[in-house]
Length: 89
Image (cartoon, rainbow, N blue to C red; front, side, top):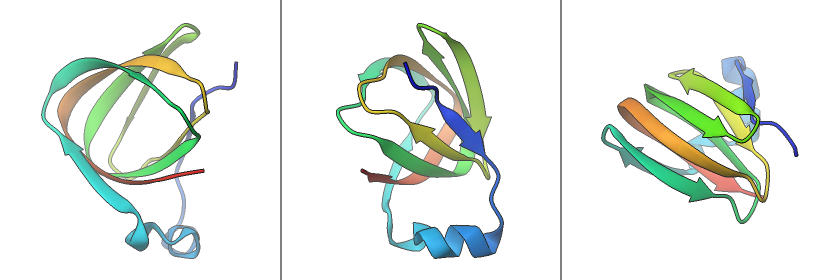
């Protein structure tokens, strides 16, 4: 199973990915199960999240670029209200 990838990118790298054009999403603190039908890449604008997978737990927050592999089944634990932008594929 592919891993969740968390990276810190420069402003130039983020601009080259076009994050300004991605769709926004936000969520209050909560816990929910999720499955990725497609690969998702997101950039966290604010907040903190722990995502639990069969392989372990990954924590990320403001300033992180996160990639979720297609087919991943996980549980999201939103610790601090999250605002992110994302794209599929």
